[in-house]
Length: 219
Length: 103
Image 1 (cartoon, rainbow over the protein chains, first blue to last red):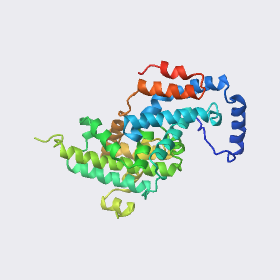
Image 2 (image 1 turned 60 degrees about the horizontal axis):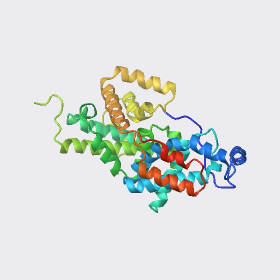
Image 3 (image 1 turned 180 degrees about the vertical axis):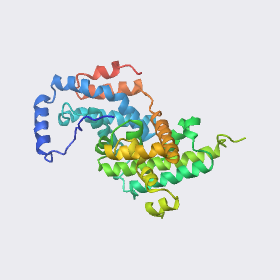
Image 4 (image 1 turned 90 degrees about the vertical axis):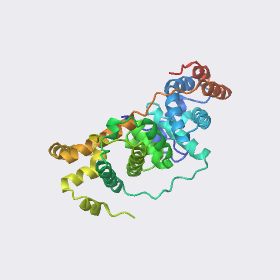
C-alpha cells in the first residue's frame, strides 16, 4: 500500500506553518513559465495519467465523461503545480483533484448520506455470510468468476461508498490516503468502505441466486 | 432500522471471541489493527473452524475486488486532447503526453 506523505492543495492563506514553508519553497522552485516546472510536472504528474484515467472512468462510468474529467484534472494540476509539494505523493494529489473535478462536474454537493457505524456494517456482513452459508454459497468467490457482476455492482453503489471501495480495494490505497482523496476523516472512510463491501456482498448473493449457482456438493 | 450490533451478535449465538472476529476481521485484513489485536484475532481464528471459514470467505471477496484492477491506459484521443490543452497553457512537456504509449 502507498505510504508516502500527502500533498495537500490548501486554499491560499490557509496553509499550516509547515505547509506554508513547503509551498514557499515550491513556488520559488517552480515559478510560472519555468522549464523546471515543466520537467517536474513531466516527471511527477504525467506518469499517473493512466491511473487517473482509470479512477475517473470508475467514477463517471462513461468514457467521454472520464476524458473530460482527466483533461480538467491535468490542466488544473499544471496550473496549480506551485501548490504541489515536491517529494510528496503526486498520485494521491491528482486523485484528489480528479474526484473534486468529478463532483463539481456533476454539480453534486458533498455527500450527506446517513452513515451507519462501521462496526454495524462489519457485523451486518456476518449476517450476509450466514445467509450465504445457509444456501451453500459461502465459496462463491473462490468458485465463480464474479468479475463482471462485481464490476456492475460497484457501478451501482452510491458515490461515497463507490469511491471508498475503488480507492482502498481496487487502487490499494491506505485508509489514510483514501481519506485525503475523499477529504473526510479516516473513520468515515472505514464506515463507507465497510458499508460498500457489505452492499456488494448482498448484491453478489442475489446475482448467484439469479444465475442458479449450484452450491458445492449439491447433486 | 436493524438491531444494534451487540443484539445481532447475540442473535447469531457467537462467542465473544467469534464476535471480535466478526467486528474486526475487515480491520484485520486491511492491516488496521494493533499487533496485539492482530495476534489475538489470529490465535482465535486458528482454533475456530467457523471463523476460519469466515476469514476465507472475506479474503476471497477482497481478492475478487482487487482483481478488478486492470492496467487500463488513457486512450490516444484523450492524450492528444490533453497535449493540446497543455500546449495552450505553455507547458513545455506537452509532447510527452502524446508520446507516451498506451499499455
